[in-house]
Amino acid sequence: MLRFLSLRSRALPAALSGSTKRTLLTASLAATPRTTLNSHSAAWSVNSRQLPSRAVKTNMFAIQQVRTMFIQTETTPNQDSLKFIPGVAVMTDGSTAEFLDARNAMNSPLAKKLFQIDGIRGVFFGPDFVTITKDQDAVWQLMKPDIYSSIMDFFASGQPIISEGAEGENAHSDTMILEDDSETVQMIKELLDTRIRPSIQDDGGDIEYRGFEDGIVKLKLKGACRTCDSSTVTLKNGIENMLMHYVPEVTSVEQVFDPEEDMSRLEFEKLERRLMNQ
Image 1 (cartoon, rainbow, N blue to C red):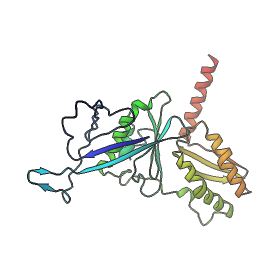
Image 2 (image 1 turned 180 degrees about the horizontal axis):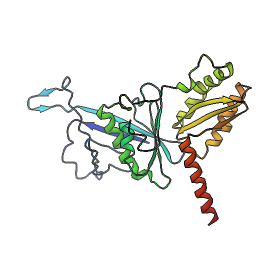
Image 3 (image 1 turned 45 degrees about the horizontal axis):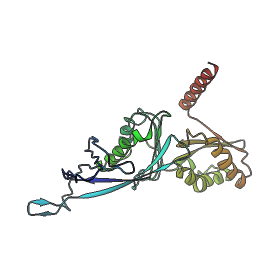
Image 4 (image 1 turned 180 degrees about the vertical axis):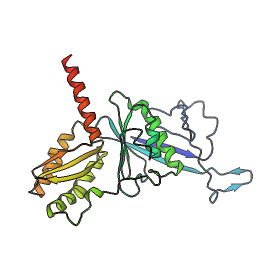
């Protein structure tokens, strides 16, 4: 679904045609919504800084400086995750970054702002997209206007996606070939980086190589793939089959979790068992 967003350095005209049934949604840099255009499009007007070097003045009137931003949304295999594609680079160095809570997002102005929206449980930055994961009971239609506004305001501000001085992930450092890597590990990393990662990112996620031991490749799923119901199918029918085909030493692929994710997963499983026993 294509969204058209208009960023203007001056306010829109105060009057609209009375015959037009559409209403206009505007937002300042503080992102204060008014109304919406219609169910198929969204437009915002944001006061942006003047461009003195290009500003053209004729007599008493200044020509408006107008920029346009197209934010496209794409569905993912995970019904609780959506890809938002702003049409500009997100992680300019080609790396990725994932934030699972507001505290973890303090080093990113955009992630921090997105977590202020009710219902958001995860934010993932790819090279040219932002994946938002919501709570199961949250409604996309109620969240989208705030998400569009937050993304647009951020790119209009000119701030870095990750605060300066903050530790970030290096671009694909997990699949970087090291001097002490065996030939098998080098082949695994090459396949992950060139054949598998692009497909995973198309679905709004990413993978992180965590090691190879006793024929088992250990991977961490990120973004939309991390909480997707079909993540097991992705690992077994997709990644595992390809690696076993090209690298005979690989016998299986396993998903690994960080300690905090393991704890959350175990608590969720306990809750499910309690509900089933009631």
